[in-house]
Image (cartoon, rainbow, N blue to C red; front, top):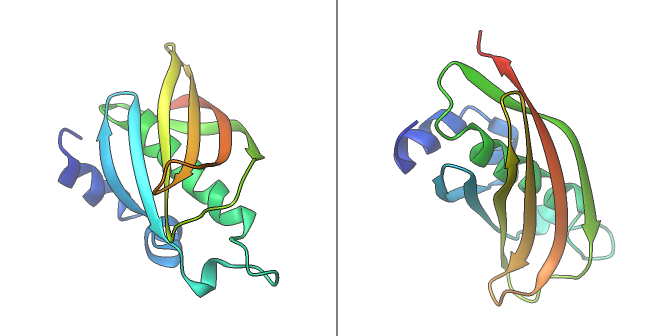
Length: 135
């Protein structure tokens, strides 16, 4: 994957993130990805707040895009992930931004932050990936 359209094309196969949830890839390059979501009624729980699973899906998707950018023969898959919810969005659009902390031959570590359009932090996560050969 060399450009944003190619990345979007590849990850359009991740139907849960792209079609069911509605997440859009905004930017991607080696060790970095930013995805967005326009909050809709379907994303909210009985209390009227965004479901935690929505945030986690954004975190996992941003990690997938960032950690797989530029990989040809290998694929990075989530090995473990921890998320902490620290706020609520004040806008109807939210973002998850993944940045590499450590990249090794078989493993990687990424920090992912979920914010709203005004940069209020909603969630922070740490995801660890393991690289496997593509089939």
